[in-house]
Image (cartoon, rainbow, N blue to C red; front, side):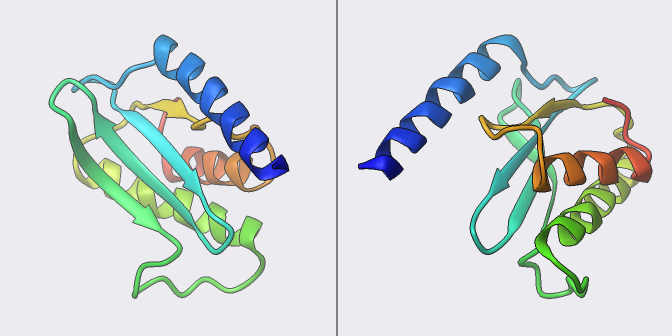
Amino acid sequence: MAGRIKLSRRDRIKKGIRKRISGSPERPRLSVFRSNKGIYAQVIDDNAGTTLVSASSEEKDFTAKGNKVEQSKVVGIKVAQKAIAAGITQVVFDRNGYLYHGRIKSLAEGAREGGLIF
């Protein structure tokens, strides 16, 4: 029962966030998904409904060691490098209903280090 309450709370927060932010071709949305095993990041153009760039800790060529927070930072740097290679420098950060803390914060800091502007 507690798991359902937690998920429904995150869904409510997520809907509130998505009302306020949207990705455009000039400034796409950097969306983050966190699972127990890994972390995933996508740069999305909501007008076209397409994913422009993605990175995750579950990719085959991902080799970062350390705990999940350190891996999240590497994923943030990796998604920033891919986005800059695709010509994207500015994004809108979508934390997807998660608290800006721990792995989510680490990914955001890694993306900023990689050169993305939020």
